[in-house]
Length: 533
Image 1 (cartoon, helix red, strand yellow):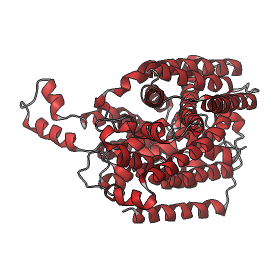
Image 2 (cartoon, one colour):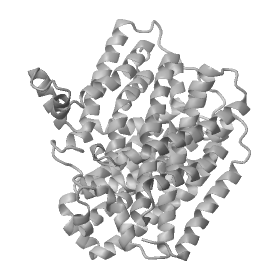
Image 3 (tube, helix red, strand yellow):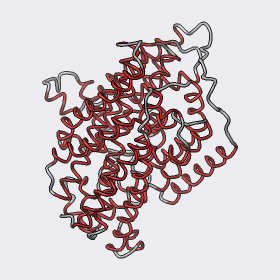
Image 4 (cartoon, helix red, strand yellow):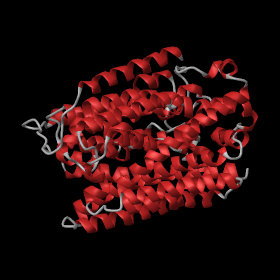
């Protein structure tokens, strides 16, 4: 597929305006608080748009549409609809505690609640996950889209996307990212809706779509489903959701930058409303692609969304759709880069390497690490096309399980178990990876290392774990971690309940509107589950 002159002008003009405007709005960032938290002056519309732009990228447009076109169908929408409920709970319960503490980063909260070791362990985990998993995955999915649509070399596409994102992120920090997200998220929603309309027209209308995809339009899948069994909806899927929306730095950072609690809560709820709508934009196209091109999607369902653009979007509109997709990649990548540099600078560099660092040095280090991280991500990204990863969306969700259950357990304990000692948090964080890794044993692995048949119990365990969906593995890991943390707390509880130091200058006034909007979001989400049961 080629772009005509009008496409190129629309694309270059849109991206140019976004980058220039965001750099202009963030031209005066001089302190760490300015650079990493936008001076703590973000209003709720900007927070809401930025949350969604940070979340939605080609890993969703490519990955979730790929899952929908594959064996998961519309059920993959649970990642968004359960996220809407999760965001309501974050706004009601978790955000007030995080915002009141005045932290720059999520790991910083663990030092206040437990000790410096807990903060350092989580910071290290976050660095690994961001660089090796999320940043690399976003770069790969963006490069794959450019490759599918225009035949651009995968590596060249990855480096192009990385260059544009690092340009304004390194310059202006979170404020630049947030202002860019306002434009990019709007284009994303419009572009996605356009593809859905064109797709419905191609398949003969909405009624034809529902008839042809009746078997795929269910939210509840069999208990033995390999990716998203109904059992995961009860427990397993909540673990990555609560981690991602409540304690994931590149998401929570926007709420931490709110000018008040009310603005933070309203921004989070605004994002929840958009999460309810998103499956109709980023999941339905995958079903349309399966209906139209199922023969071309065998073995690589991640091609679903790129095929729709390639075959359905006419010249003229194509440039805007391309800009929206590129913007989705760039906005998510920029958010991850900014948050990774924030964690490195504030949790590792300033805390352990240079405690007396000046504000100018802090900003300089943050900018330098932004560049370093994008280079590492660009080197890793082209390797993620390996079929062993089972699609890019599965890769992201599965590999984060080596961290997310332990992090979530530590925060839940920190909030609600006031006598939980630091040893409980450290135990939970350290056993996460080995427990989750053990649950990934399968018959092929033990055969490859030459111990198949030598231990009957190991063969049975490998067979069981090989059939278990990764979300259920997360649930089992979480339960084991909680048991270990309870044991550590019972063995040596704190003598006095932990009292957190609170930042006094933040406006912590809230509103009843926050409660009512949250209730409406939950009711609507439950109604949608009933509709598509």
